Length: 120
Image (tube, rainbow, N blue to C red; front, side):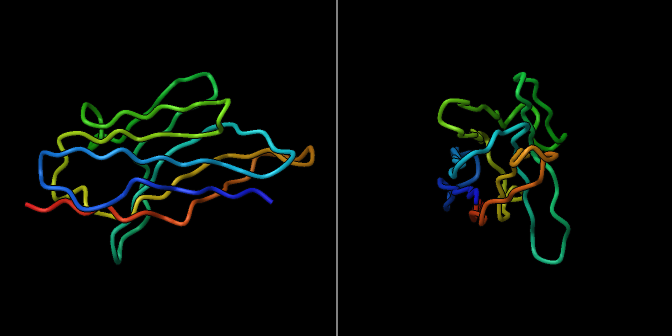
């Protein structure tokens, strides 16, 4: 079994910063892409940022220029540095990883979610 454990959410004032972390743990697995999604009540889960094994990154328009995604392939950890936070960034943030196990195709794994609240 593979688990993704997130940390770093919390309450911050508008204009502030937070750094989210997510570490994958388990046995006999290999990670492809990793990323962050977010979700607010009653809405779908939307992609925020994605980073591939190559290091190539993609950002949602709302995150580009303010958020930075990075990963440590040795520690199986992905980070999201969030700067210049806005109240509309308030959401539950979910870590995502595409994981290979048992010779099969990559499957999506998700963290438990961490709340980010930005006050105005």
